Length: 374
Image 1 (cartoon, rainbow, N blue to C red):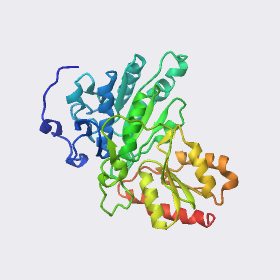
Image 2: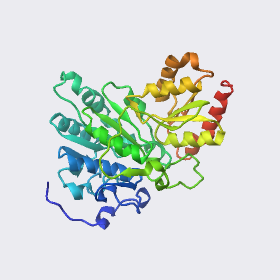
Image 3: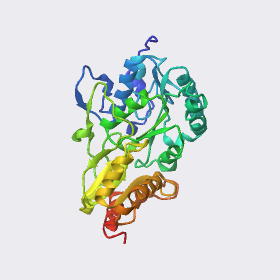
């Protein structure tokens, strides 16, 4: 391990916008021993990386401001202090370079966990992810793999406008060789990130930034409840793994199935409650691989399906979900499949809450499918 360079909390926090930091939350990696403690998603993700860096010397973390400052949202906070400059470090402002370096490291046996500061900035790295990382195992006949994780905060709900709010997941679900994971709560976030780090193939790991400090149900005019009040914020401090490719049934119901992921899981729960409809809410957790068996069983039980995601509707992942449900459950459907999504526009700043799929829009879709889609 490299020699540690001491620095203070004041040094790390200098120059960082305070509204982007949970000032009261100590990183989960500070916990000693084993057990369970309340964590927000920032702490849970931090703990996952720390656990793997402590366990495996080949795991390292880097990205723009992801070393010394601990990342703009503090997900990598204190990892450099604990694990050294050679394993947690800052990268140049070059997303293409960050991912290219990670691919080379992975080919030689390391397991890099890289951060793209916002998902909106991932596009310069798209060619490296698609043409190199996703194809490494295939083009080498299995001689090389690309065991890398590309982490990135994504989605809206923070008034970030069109360049800090995008949801580009469908651009990656289309690519053979990639896995795409989107957690909705701290417990899953840690377990899924550990699974992603241990995976021998590349994983794009999107972190809904609106969920970092608390579950958000879409009622933007109401205070956000803290994670500590949620069962899924009770997170083991040690290692555990949540399997990639297995959905979680967040709410059981008999009248209609809601498919969602990320922030929209909490919006779907709020929408079902607002509509007063006995909806079954499924958190997909990973889009590729997809737990189609859980989806199929639910839709065959309820006979109706509503799909909710924040990305624009056209060519969004909801279109793929709709096709799969139609192919597998056609004779069980009692109404057309409905999609509640973002609009086919750039993400607006002034009209964020008109764009953001809220619980009222979900409730309206639920009522529509319950009357046969009319």
